[in-house]
Image 1 (cartoon, one colour):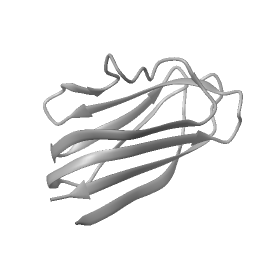
Image 2 (cartoon, rainbow, N blue to C red):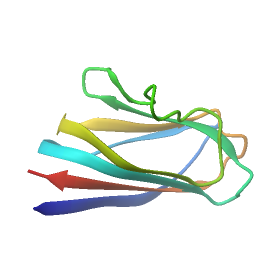
Image 3 (tube, rainbow, N blue to C red):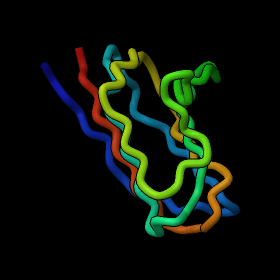
Image 4 (cartoon, helix red, strand yellow):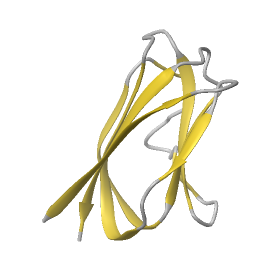
Length: 105
């Protein structure tokens, strides 16, 4: 098994940012961690695929109005292609760290 880690920091502007992942051949998203600089920052987080379909939030994993650190694990969401990570409606414009753990097949 091969695991990859996508880690970085992006700064919100007008309450939002978005970044694209590398292209995944075949994999499973196992964990997502989002950590704003300020623990009281409230934000929405989403992941969409290259066709615009929503991967997160789902009925199991609500990613709307998150306050502070978000740590979703045991996801096992299939990935193929490029995905967009988005923060929106953040109450503070600041640096927000992100990390994805992907099991590549």
